[in-house]
Amino acid sequence: MVRRNKPKQLTGPDLERFLQAAEGLHNCIVNPLISTQCEHYRSLRDLHEALLKAVEDITGKDAIFMRWFGAGSP
Image 1 (cartoon, rainbow, N blue to C red):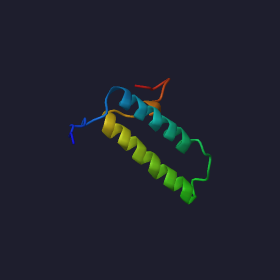
Image 2 (image 1 turned 135 degrees about the vertical axis):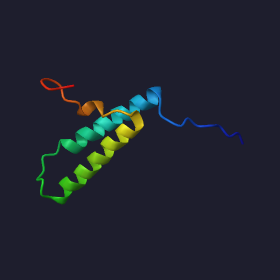
Image 3 (image 1 turned 30 degrees about the vertical axis):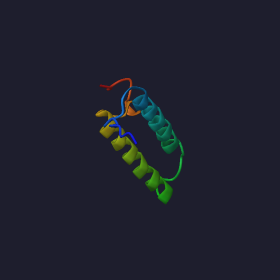
Image 4 (image 1 turned 180 degrees about the vertical axis):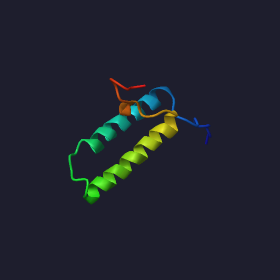
């Protein structure tokens, strides 16, 4: 059996696929218009925070799909 060293981080096409999947999940999380008082909303909020943290940990930047455009944007 041959052992190969696996990369220690995502690069190139793998990173791009990850970001596309993260954006799709982001859209699925934020699109439902449900009451902020229900357990489902709180669970989706927690999931969204974890997603954004994962994107920042992996890319070293804020999620590009969360950036604001227009007046006051960086």
